[in-house]
Amino acid sequence: MSEIIHSPEETPISEPVAEPIVAPPPPPSLLRRIFYGADGFRSGWSLLIFSVPFLALYGIGRLIMHYMAATPAPKKGAAPAQSGPLEVILGELIIFGIVALFSFLVSLIEKRSFGLYGLGGIGNLKRLRDFGIGMIWGLVFLSILVGALRVGHLLSFDGLAEHSAKAVVGYGFALLVAFFMVGLAEEFEFRGFLQYTAGRGISGVFHSLFPRSKHAHAVGFWGAALLFSVGFFALAHTGNGGETPLGLAAVAAAGLTFAFSLWRTGTLWWAIGFHTTWDWAQSFLYGVPDSGLMMKGHLLATHPLGAPFWSGGTTGPEGSILLFPTLVLACVVIHFTLPKRDYPVTPSQQPPV
Image 1 (tube, rainbow, N blue to C red):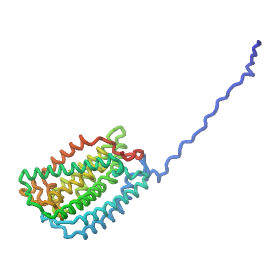
Image 2 (tube, rainbow, N blue to C red):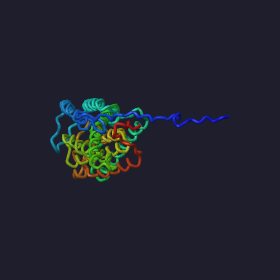
Image 3 (tube, helix red, strand yellow):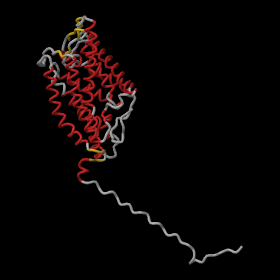
């Protein structure tokens, strides 16, 4: 068989195929850079959009709560005024509704899930378990504190305040609902949208200043916690008639404890459960003032003994120096009983499940 040999002129030569030239994306406009950063809609704008209408309606809500009160707030050092469960439920429902409404509207602008702000996964068994376990620990730790006051002769039990079984069950249930609303409203108000958004902003600033640091997330979270869980949370309790400086410090410490549970679980449900039964046990079960406020329909009648520094005085057990080791013990329980889950900080992260 003869072999066909092609001459050099006849050998086909493949020509290189030119790759298409992809133009770089145009730089973002000045207007977009003003409103958007690497983490989406800038947190400062989100806080501004939330705060202006919120503060206006919040003030109206507080006025409504004030005029709903059965008696005027007592002067500093006076006996605490007593409120009813219905006014607490309605008042806290107004506050929660205002906070949730504007948080949801800003979440639409940011294109983020509303669940990122701490209330995600209520239908999830993990969230229900967090809430239930939080309720148990709230009752346990308030009972430990009250027991320490009783053993130290700093609190006197005067007997039953309610003798009718029907009244006891009715007030007990009504106040449980009332303090669930208190826990839901206060936790979401101070550790929901504001905590998440301010933490995101502080984290971004820290990362721009120290790009190699791995602690931007923690700095953002705890910076926001100091601002809202300590500063604003304590400030919101200054209007309570029986409150004291030590009691306000205790409120700030409680705020940090609740923030720690949020850091561990990624949601507010453990803190809401703890907050619910902690306040319920004070106001109904043991009949002691709760941050200087008394509720109608408590089961037991009590009164403080000795120096307010130890007994809490008109503030109640939260005004006692013994509260602080109680909260430290609560943080130990949080650390060892709550599994660490990621607290979401970026648009790509979804609410924890």
